[in-house]
Figure 1 (tube, helix red, strand yellow):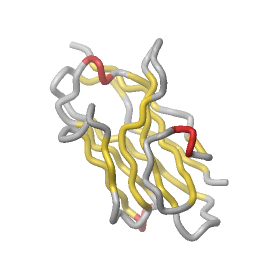
Figure 2 (cartoon, helix red, strand yellow):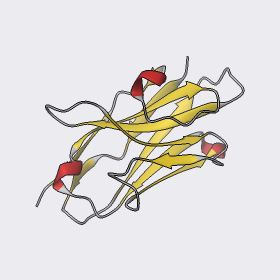
Figure 3 (tube, helix red, strand yellow):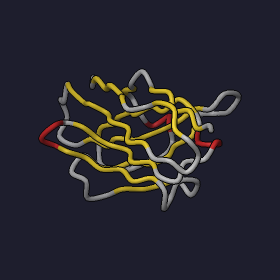
Figure 4 (cartoon, rainbow, N blue to C red):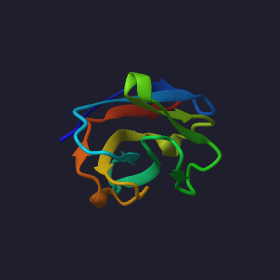
Amino acid sequence: QLQLVESGGGLVQPGGSLRLSCAVSGFTADAYVIGWFRRAPGKEREGLSCMRWNGRVSHYADSVKGRFTISGDNAKNTVYLEMNSLKPEDAAVYYCAARSGLLCLLNSRQYDDWGQGTQVTVSS
């Protein structure tokens, strides 16, 4: 079971940027996919982006494509989500999650291990 810890959330003005980090530990399988998700109050959890641990495959939801970028630093065992041009509707608790294997999916049910989440607030 992987351990994931998110950080980097906070308050940002509309149009601003934030970079979220997901520190990962406890690797036991040969391949992993890390995904970023969010849940806004009253809404279902939304898949935003995912990438293979080696970084060669990534995928984005239409709602964030062109604004958010997922990346990883294997030396630091950390995956990042760079978020630009933030909108009030991006406000949510953001989670990273992991699944073993190679399929990069945005379905949260396909992920086994989750972090505790970090709050992002977009407001002027």
